[in-house]
Each structure stands twice: as C-alpha cells, then as structure tokens.
Length: 195
Image 1 (cartoon, rainbow, N blue to C red):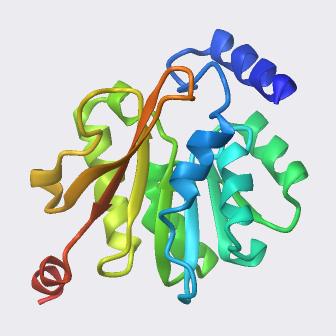
Image 2 (cartoon, one colour):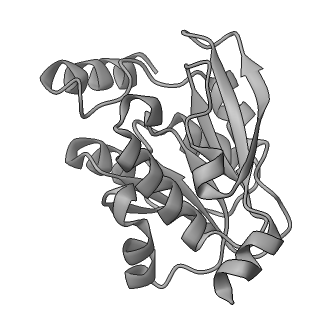
C-alpha cells in the first residue's frame, strides 16, 4: 500500500488537477463501497477511476468474478499498473465522460452497479453532470451508482439527473474521513425516458 501511495503522490505532483487523491483509499473505505454491490444478479460491475486498485481488490473480495468486473482508468500509468496487478480483470483506458461509448464498443451489458472513486466535487458542474448522465444511461433500472467523497455535499446533482441519493456510510478510519453515497434512478424514471 505504501508503494501505491508513492505512485499516486508522484502522479499528483506531476498533475494535481488530473489525479484526484494523493493517497490510496483505505481498506475500510474500499470495503464500505464494495458492500453495496448487489450480489447474485447477472451483469457487470463497472469501477470508475481504479487508481492503484484498493477498491478493485475490495470488489473482488465480495465475490464478484474477475470476468464480470470492468475497471475504467484514464491515466495511462495507473491503467498499466492495474492491468498488471489484476490480469484477470478487464481494465479499460478511457474517460468516464464517454462511458456509454466505451462499454458499447466492448460489448459490456448489462451493468448491475457502478463504483466510482472519481473526484467529482473537484470537477466542473458540466463534467459532473456528463459523467452522471453517462453512468445512468448504462446502469440497469434501479441499479446503484456508488460514489465516495471527502466533501459534505452530494457529488452528483440529484435533481438534474432525476436520481435518489443518500449517504450510506461514513468512514472515519480513512484519511481524510469519507462518505459513501448511493444513488439510484427509479424504474419509473427509466420507463419515462425510454417512452
């Protein structure tokens, strides 16, 4: 974990606006995020912003098969690190702003959960909204979008996206302390958009 934090710090020092954290998520935060993934249902789990892989490990530890986990990482160095660390997991280099196109190209469907470590609150509102809209366009109706944040407010605009979201966990052991938000788009909202 120390070498992973060094890698993140090195990348952050090179480009602080591109890398959202200077240290890897704690095992407690990773586990808190992963425990909200629905088990025993068909479909893929998509992780956004895999970083050095602590959340990837926690997702696999819940019993998600490696061939049903897709990790999306924008940074080429972190993408390579993840692909080497988790050779049985499909690690895609790409941007969450183009998630629908990325998953369609890879034939990934249905998506039963998205787990995001993206630093949404440090992004422009238009980019936050675009990422949220892309995520809910690929999620199955009622499937969760799981996001952590260090901030006090929702990292997604629930009203604009037409989603329900609440804080499900607070992880005080993480440095800094973090909250885990769980968002869902109602089935009724999905049906109205499809009509």
